[in-house]
Image 1 (cartoon, one colour):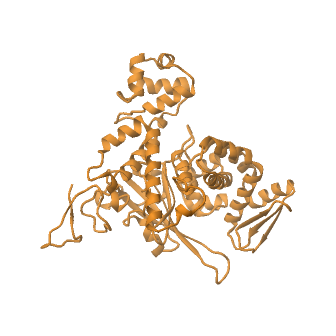
Image 2 (cartoon, one colour; image 1 turned 30 degrees about the vertical axis):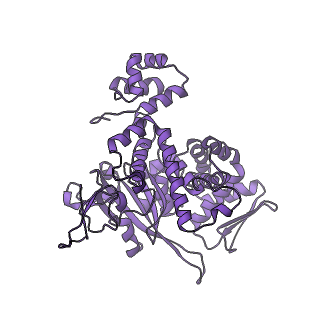
Image 3 (spheres, one colour; image 1 turned 135 degrees about the horizontal axis):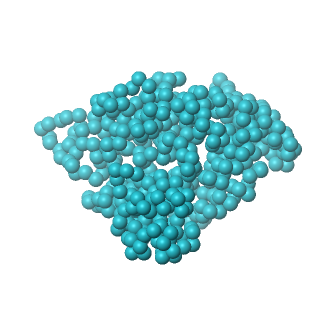
Length: 465
């Protein structure tokens, strides 16, 4: 917290509302005057050290929550969306965007939903879909986008589900697949491993679960736990879904699958045991995969979810991309926020992972806001178990801010102090402000261009600041 001011008005209001306290009562407990609290809640003043200490001692607040990543995500998302040409040539300043994100987060999210609705409607018209001829209106935001935003804004951590999964996970440590199959059998569910074309098939009428013989053991464990979550923890999943207030039944159905997946990962790698093991081996993905019977992708994704209040792990970003560069999974607990639309920066090492199968790639990178990161990338392949069956290939990326690099085995032998060692990456070309990037695919939306017919550099234009 030292070194910069923290404006957390929305967080203070949310906490006071949750505690059912008036402003006067809340101010008294924090040891400040009523006008001072009012100014902090309206972001006219930063949160003082006195208030920070009172929040920690009086209410047990993890003060790192005041540096809410929600605001950073909203700022990044709003900056990208308002750079859309539909808003004209002069997008709002970052300072204005920060004010909206801090003071009116609900309005900011509604604005993002509105832009999503516009974008999807525009794409449907461009593709000449016959949307007007269908029964029922199309949703304003796709179920996939709505669920992605749900996990995005809850920091990819769902406390009640994570803790329930942890209790189960401690029971099955050591041999998760055999133990979960035994638990299923205790409830009359027979599990077989066979090749029927699907990773997991459950028939309620006969209480038979079939797991694919072509899948890796880690995948079979994960799928068995997924089904167990749907069968034994459905009330918990439904209660979590009720709190989310999804706009459509389709979104809720997609989110239920997402929560069952979350439960499976959290049970396979229970929070406390996994966090302790990660710290002990300095976040060596291969060691963690072997210890918990998980895949490298499962381990990397789990590391990005370790955001339990008062027991947080290192803030990681996690991403998975396909061979076309499309982001298929993403989450960031760091200041780096991925673009809502399009792919990732081509200078990022995650794209090079396809060229070096079976190897971990390391990269020191710096984003346009001058934040530095240690980035790790690795290709992952998923076979379907037959000669003619397609192999699905992805690359996963994991990284943290450089201040945490010493806690990662992957930082060994890297010169973290050398400025020239850092690759100058961006988020995506359409919102990246770097004027001289040799890999730029399209001009930035918020900058004007200069075109000189008598001179050609790497690009056919110059980006003006």
